[in-house]
Image (cartoon, rainbow, N blue to C red; front, side, top):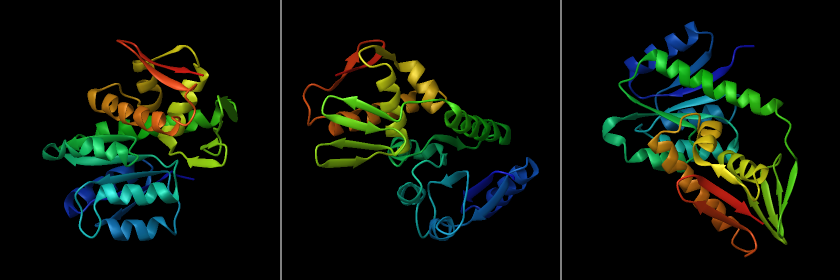
Length: 227
């Protein structure tokens, strides 16, 4: 069965061009001209990846991404953004984006990013990982993407879970920044690095109840999970 892509793009010409191109490359692609119709369809259909324009009527791409993440935490999301919307990229990563591409872009570049993200998603399904990690008073369930502390339960996003799992596998060692970026974000560019900083801040907030558990900055290198 071909992998299915949800494409939300309000520019009719660009949307149809993308749909035809991705269909020709073997992806079953459904196009929606606004965020609301895309979300309504997402609720009743199954997809392998979402491509979302940021500026759309009815519901913008950032809001749509948040809503999609509530329903399906693990589905990959790529944002389409204009150069004038660069400030929205970090907000996009906060909404759970896996990647972004700036308009105008080449079809070949978009195809590469789609293939890389789907390939990474498939490889993660085959890599053997521990189901649970003990971090001080916390129990991290990697499969369920849940962090438990006493009677407190925190539901993690896919990116949060992936980053915490990587930190756990390198517990009390330095997790190299570029290695983490390439492993989770594919590309170690500036905006992905800023995105990772956002997720590190979130994880520190989640882990603050136990002072014996810390994520330290290692200057010029990366991070160290100490517990």
